[in-house]
Length: 116
Length: 115
Image: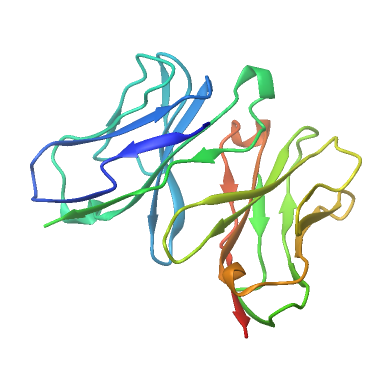
């Protein structure tokens, strides 16, 4: 089954404790992206990757890191989480060159993160 | 710059009625994609329907259809025979070269289906 898998789905952590949210897709997609969603603010892009070893900042990259060493994986790293990073996080992927980068994004189920 | 406008913050619709959710967009691109996503209260983002800018026919997926009017830059979602399970937030989005292929999102419409 074609899917984007995020882990963990739910996490409560404390300020400053490094954490990684994993994202994996099995559709051989070139493009991957991370979003956060907060009440009243909609979805905001954190980072995206057009292909392996190619990443770029989105609208709200501060406090986050990403890497794209393999095509299927795009982990989101919070080096020193703070309470303002409490949010619902989505990973998404889509075709790149083959789809002209204009095709639909497939979303993971979301990761609900709480930083105390 | 690209922009998506959803003018209906919320809508109430009687079960089994058809509903149209409005979406207008602004872009200078010739090649772009338009999307509708559904987000129920459980939080996941569910892809509903896609329309490519060069697609001549309106996209349809089951009870969902996209009323694509390119000259008016309009991409309204039509849900036929609404069901209680259609109650959710609905987001219109687009991507194209003008936004470096990043998704531009509308603010969303909260749809509530009344029994």
